[in-house]
Length: 370
Image 1: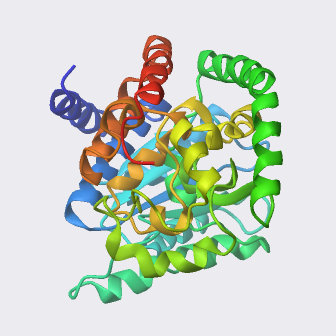
Image 2 (image 1 turned 180 degrees about the vertical axis):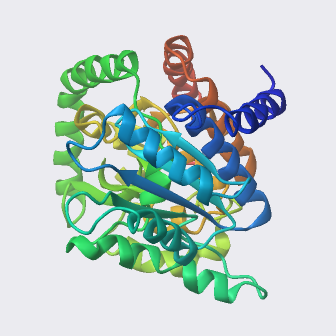
């Protein structure tokens, strides 16, 4: 079904449910998440802000009658543009377009005050998207309000991550994909271990420093993880990156450079053969990466992306992807991201197997910059 047709049908269903008996007033999990994705794309286009109110009814007060009561409260409180739904984990969620965190917390307070003080009151959280915004001249006040969300969410005494709203939009890894990842990682590590150990010994013998390089990357939902590689550069290479940024041969925030002067002689061979990437089978086995998925960017580069670019974080990052096998070094960063988004929308077992097979000739013929 074309996406614009699906959006119109969902909008019609939302309007129809306004007059339906509660809790039919609430969208189901699938419908709500589709509506949330649509609102997210709207925010990415127009630079506005979206708040997501999450309501968890107290234990012992989550029966159908309690959900119906909350639905009726929402029905009398929400605007026509707001969208309520019931998630699969039992929480009630509300999309509040063009509403900073302050406005969302006002809605939460109004709903809570209907209940008597104490444990019978629902627990409310507010997530704001995007969590990081590029400030415009006319919305500094809105930005200041939206930036309050992480502080308010951390009121339980535990710091909230700045990408919580992005993590809400992240898609869970299907069982078939996780099964392929685990099997592939075990086989990959078994076959690659002699190569990795030999390369590690050669690195230690030819240049000072550790054999492995661990760098923080942004993965699913913007959560950071340590990505493993064999070290291909001289120690302190990251400190020199700032001086080389203007020489990057990739537009956008991603830094790519042929014949990077920070690379060791052995490192050039490891990068040319992609042997330096083999330790990432360990990341796949741990579930931080997948065999196939958008390539993870270093944290600074990922956070410098435009908001629509960051939709690539809705699925687990991978060792190989469409860009890796067909566009590396030959397309703009925007086109690179579009390839990632297309994969995220259409991922399937066949697509993963196809990209894994296509990776072999891509490596043999050394496509793209290393």
